[in-house]
Length: 221
Image (cartoon, rainbow, N blue to C red):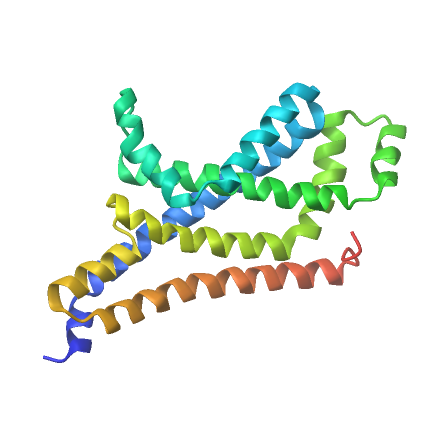
């Protein structure tokens, strides 16, 4: 039996890992984006002390290697009496970690907005919340599409670290097959191909969004 035939026989293992990775990525990245928006709103609309504390937490999260965060949640929290399943740790760690990065992406885009946009909204009687949701964030999203796509791909790649805490993702599937049949090259080539498929989908989606932005004449935002 050839090595590729073995790979084909183990397709269910790879498909299961692909499904786990896809669910981890989709749910965690969605939560991370929402968290990033929420953090930006708090940074803009809370007292200076709270804003400074949030900024310190965001900076600490960005300085922390993702694998250490996953280790702390999976192996450290049980010492405090808090236990979570490996997949739950994956969702929480990815969401928190990349939420901090998305906040910084949005904050950079926000700082580049023209002051006249906010001033015009305030002159029309918009509240802070209404100004943020209807003026600031739509323009921030339009400016952030390329950086968001890049961060999403990083988030996807970070899911591979979760195999170390027993999450059965693509990397874990490839490692399981290669250790059982001693075919590391072909097993990990398949894993690379599966990650690549998701990355291509992200790139195509970001390209589609940028075309829509340009067609509507909003690329200047």
